[in-house]
Length: 428
Image 1 (cartoon, rainbow, N blue to C red):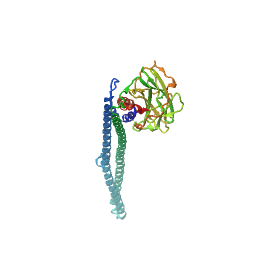
Image 2 (cartoon, rainbow, N blue to C red):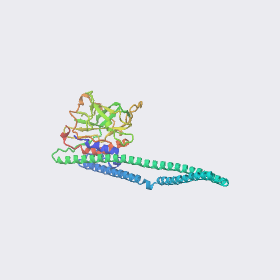
Image 3 (cartoon, rainbow, N blue to C red):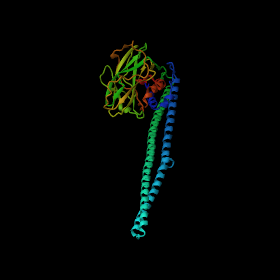
Image 4 (cartoon, helix red, strand yellow):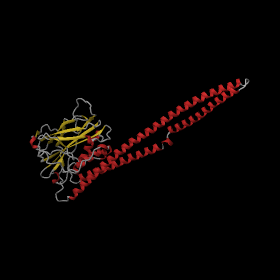
């Protein structure tokens, strides 16, 4: 059951490209399932997202090339370059004048040495005049040399600033290319899944009963709003069936995404999620499609708790993170569905060795239904999954975490149901 295979890729593109958030809207309204239009709408949304990412990349690349061209022509176009050139020319003239003045002093001294008694007074006056002129020439050269240094410094700083700007633009281009590749991958996968669905034909293999179920809720408690790099934190995920019908199999979905403070550099590889069930104390890694053990069954009005552990490597830089959660269900009769949106819990990553003190728990990005009147399900009714779900690999996510929850909400409604209507047996 490849329920959220595309969703993780789509979120990865959205959280790193704000423009994509503006181009993606939910594919259904009023929680009404649409057998065919949802899939087409979601592919169309991903096409818009891919086009926006392509435009962003083209613009970033054009800006980088323009900056490189501007740097190359800076010597001809910069006023500071012109001022530096003029200062050097003036310094050259001042040096020539000083050389001439110094030579005039030498000549005057020689003339005075060889002068007759009658000529000595005039020659002495000439020497004094030459010496005064040499002092003026020396001061002029010193001032001209200082202006050269000042002008060269200003022009050099201008070139350095231009080079740094190019460096930043190159980073932006790289980030835009990563966004473009992620969006292209999401679109390609959606089209692939759409084509696979079409091949099922009318033999009943394609399930069109998957629906958004707002009463299947996932709530995280105990996740701190600040996590120090090099530490592990334990928290809990509660999955609640708020409907009046038993769900035969419920698949909790958890997904962690993180970036450094700039929001440009993905550090997902430094953030790890594990889970442990009530019936086992052994910690297991979340599978590569971001699912954990299935709950089978989850009775009407009941809930099940799953222990989670978040580990942030000591090498992780200070930054931001978000943990997404959701739930999907599959019944023996082929009906299926799940949480309409991803719930996002944002947290800060503090550098290793930091001591943030007491911090509050991370808060959800959307309002949860009131489930205070629901009864707990016994621990024995939640059994570990027999194996991880069919996996084709989850996409790397790359961020602006302030928009992450919005991205999940915007894309989740449409994209998650693109991949839901698949063969009933493919989840086993």
